[in-house]
Image 1 (cartoon, rainbow, N blue to C red):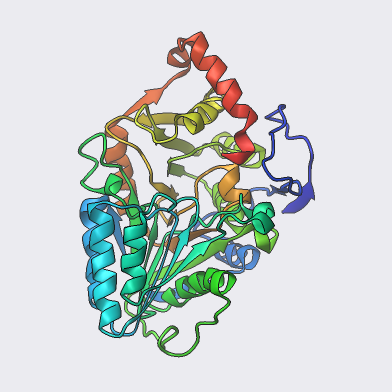
Image 2: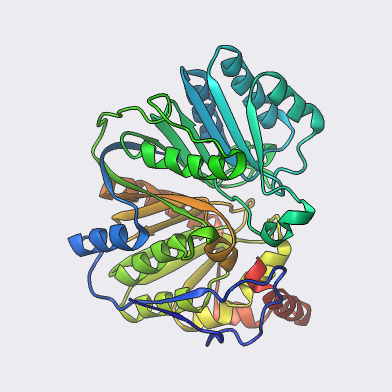
Length: 418
């Protein structure tokens, strides 16, 4: 793999308008040399991301709020020593109140409860809810609040979704703590999302990801067995946690996607809320198709929370479709999941979108599983979502309106900030 700076991407010729001037993004190039099933893939993923693959874990896939929230709340209510929660979105509403009450009850019982919320994503949280959390002994920190002396880092957000209980049980994925994620994607206001619940030694890596931003926000080191207990093996899932932050220099999340795509030999199934691929990931997807890989992507349809990002995504459709990448727009509700399954063996579930903001500006975390059973579950979910999606073909694409074309080009100008 080669790493180099490149000031002019081949696929996008317009320059983005930066909100905060930053160094040019790192460019990644990799040739297909091995498959997902090869030891070389696992060794490369470990070496280039710096995250070890851990054996002895038990993984459960949770689909939509109807299953996600009860599982998370049950874990919180069983906490005995520590609860660490980091989310981009925590809003008022029924779900927000349920979590606040569960966290407060455990804090009153003597459990150490620490919460990191993004100062932009969770800005709508009411003063009453904030006072309730703090008044019940919960340590709450805001990640990068707006101050005159922090303007240079204001565009750097934590987009991570993490819940770790007693250092033994961890959750990550795409949801926010808000009513929008209620239900089973059975209505337009019930979003489609996926979370992963993990038990086993790899939870220590999730705890470290939380501690990384707790230190940045509070300046306090979390130490000892309350946070980092000895965790025995509880299953046989080979699992990895990858955290990414612009302060670390390179994008480990982007490396995760590039290595996985370039190693594919059969299939790639991507579900992502904000699919705005950069030149490197477009090149990797194109190369996969040339190798005979079936590449399918599910993205939001008209039910989307940020129409501007959808327009930026659609700017790439013609290029992707001409190169054999199949695109499907999810119809019933907002597709908010951030997942990928490769060759029926490798699964990634996390907070990261498939866009330059997640690759370059946000703090993200993904959980990867190298297991055919988990991949089969994910492929079955993907098939269910395909049945509720509409495929975008070139003939259909060319029939879009002139107004849509203008919106796409305007959105593309700001692509690096989306």
